[in-house]
Length: 241
Image (cartoon, rainbow, N blue to C red; front, side, top):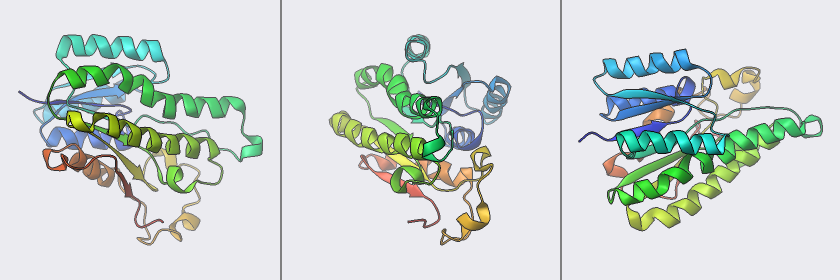
């Protein structure tokens, strides 16, 4: 029986690359979007063209009750997921004195609360499968180092790391691994407005990364080969310390 993986925020960027890579690896994919339904549908079509099953769920990961209702309905109809990739996220950048409460709350609501909202309804169904499972969260170099103009984003992504490590402890005996991938500067829409000339000076590899390179790390972490790897943070950042 094929294994299914939910990839949040998979209509574009890193999430799309992850969804397509995992489909090539042989998984059925539950594509997720908040707003970009047409793009999510195209990702699902591309997955189907690869010979895997795909369906699209649309919800805001910050809407707790709605997320639980949709996910519980989906797994009641299709069975629980083997893997969950918590990728959905937003940025609302500004220097801290000028950062509004709304920008702080929006980033926390999506990037950090989304961890709870998506995973909490899924953990016990995954445990009841009595089979190995995989959870991979997406943090950021900002969550490890902090980043100017991203106090909110850095705080949320650091929180993801702490939550990932704690959940890994709780699930280790259940053969459900929980790991984190922390990308550096990756060629996605989130790079808009980033002064790349200055940023590249800080990256030993002297280039920005590709979404497919992040997807490759996720691919390994959800594979059977990664069964003894849990509670880890894997940086994909070209050597950015």
